[in-house]
Image (cartoon, rainbow, N blue to C red; front, side, top):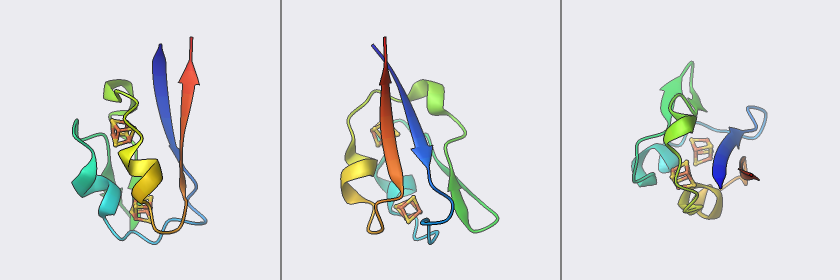
Amino acid sequence: MAFNPIVDKEKCTGCGTCINICPVNVFELKDGKSEPVRAKDCIGCKACEVNCPTGAIKVEEKE
Ligand code: SF4
Ligand code: SF4
C-alpha cells in the first residue's frame, strides 16, 4: 500500500499544524500554503488529515 497526501490549497490557511505533526516531515510551507514536498515518504498515519483545522488534507491510498 502506498499513500498520497493531497492539500486543497483553497482550504489551506497555512497554519502549520500538518507540518509540525507529520512524523516523516512530508510538508513544507510554500507561499503561505502547505505543500506535500515529500509525499513519497508518507506512511499513511492520517495525523495530518485528522488534525487539519480546515479539512484541507486528504490522504489517498493506492495499491
Ligand atoms: S493543517 Fe491544514 S490548514 Fe494548516 S497548513 Fe496544513 S493543510 Fe494548511
Ligand atoms: S498521513 Fe501521516 S505520514 Fe502521511 S503526510 Fe499525513 S501526517 Fe505525514
